[in-house]
Amino acid sequence: MIKNLRAVLRYFLIWILFFFLERLVFLLFFASKLNGVPFGEMVKGVFYGMWMDVSTAGYFSVLPLLGFIVWWLIPSVTIKKQWICIYFRTLIILSSLITVINLNIYREWGSKVSRRAFEFLLASPGEALASSISSPLLLSSIILIALIATGFWLSKFVVNNSPKQGKFKYKLPVALLLMGLNFLAIRGGWQLAPMNESMAYYSSTPILNHAAVNTEWALLHSLMSGSGNKNPFEFYKKEEAEAIVHELYPQVSSDSTQSILSVKHPNIVLVIMESYTADVVESLDGEKGLNPGIERMLKQGILFDRIYASGDRTDKGVVSVLSAFPTQGMKSIMKENTKQAKLPSLFKSLKALGYQGTYYYGGETEFANMKSYLLNTGCQELIDKSNFEEKDMNSKWGAYDDVVYKRVLDDSQNKKQPFFSTLLTLTNHEPFELPVKAKFKGDAVENKFRSTAYYTDSCLTAFINTAKKYPWYKNTLFVAVADHGHRLPKNIYEIYDAHRYRIPLFFFGEVIKPEYRGTRVSKVGSQTDIAATLLGQIGVTHSMFPWSKDLFNSEVKGHAFYSWENGFGFVNAENKALTYDNTSKSVVYTSDGFKDNDSSSLRHAKAYMQRVFAEFLSY
Image 1 (tube, rainbow, N blue to C red):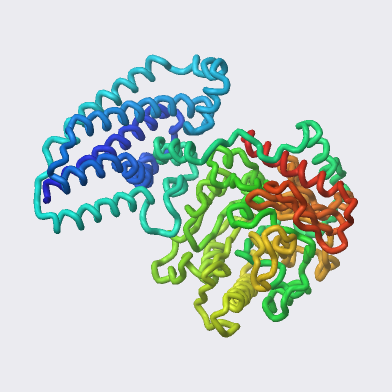
Image 2 (cartoon, rainbow, N blue to C red):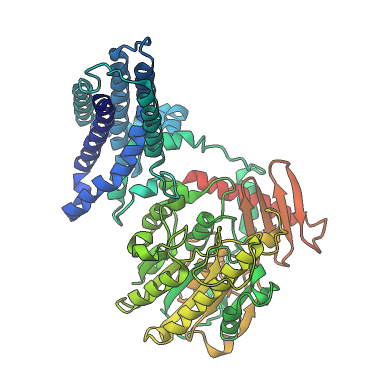
């Protein structure tokens, strides 16, 4: 029995060793890019990448493991050992080829080999050949031969004996256990988020993250994700769609922007509140009694009362807020490593002005590939679940909001000003757990949501009240916005209903000029407008954010766009909304007062969706 288990484990470990050699080759090949990088930082990649190596080894072990189990459980069935050897060597050849191709793809594109590379090869073989001419063919050939030779040498250790027989009643549970463990290896463990590339990300140096990512896993994932070249939202010719969208973003004068701040470069604390729909904000016609703290703050702040979320999920909301990039329907650019790295971001723009950028989240930043997005778009410091004590991991998602707010305050004492701190809350999320007594009684999900929304409000209020005791407070602008709306607590809005996307956005702090405190901005806007609005206040161009508009600029007309899986909506300057379903090719929702003959909104909606997805594909 033990010898049989050793044979299975040996096959698995051989692949781990081979993947280690591939990673070493990658680092040596790009040694010139690693000047100044501490050796210890490079070594970390081995450990971070091993998790993904285990997952890939699990995929490569499926067929051999099934063959082994059949061979072991049914003595009359004979599987020749050379077949397993042939299978192993075939994968070695393919893996070696992928490794060498990846080296040259990365050399040219700065990204790892993916479906895009193969699509490029099949669609434009001439251009692909031209692109490879400058590749170091001799060195590539040497590496390929060396990897294949090493793999073939390792193959003699794969199967060197037949399975030992034993009692069936012992073999069957062991066989089931082996299959279960292999599935767990493929998934990457039993944590909330299944295996994704973020789990291998650990550094602010991109190439170290790319080295840590298992090349075979990344390619397999990319191929399994389906074709990414076709735009499912083609309504107009390219030039026409561009012209229609341009109507929404005309040239405006920066002199038309109201200056609402008394400080040019304030600290900025951006709070992205999980699922904090407008329906829990009394000042936005939401239910009363759910946000007493925010209501008090609004008397000294600025409320934007016609703001809409760009999408329906956190991964889309975070990108819309930080990168001002609209949602792409069924796609999520946060999950596309090669695309996300090309996005602009507030972290990048503010870093250029000397801001220190930090992102706080009490959960797993690997979830939805968030960590790689943040590191790829300029986040200098990332504080997540791994940075908190085990005693603080009291909810399904991680640390409760009050714990994370406390960490922000503790860190602030040592931060150089100006700083840009972003915090994503998590408590107001299913299953709506609380570390305190629920405000609203009962097990109804609506009341659980109300209680966590109330808790979210109390934590934000306590955070700002405590911040008033710190010297940096008087030089700080606080910005609060939701990551997306929610069907709760009213539980009446479908995914296509514009009410589902309405969210709060408000500014607060002593840096706001007295005459603007307690005011409202009723221009229709989106999460994507936060970037231009903030940069406009500190006198910086926002041209790198083409989908963002300055809500304080009097020449800017309001509008908002939102989308979900295969549909999208548009809110015009009069705050009238329309939603289009791309499956049925029809308008499925219009808000009260919407004029049937207002074809311009549908035209804008279609062109907007077409151009956003086209830009997504072009990255």
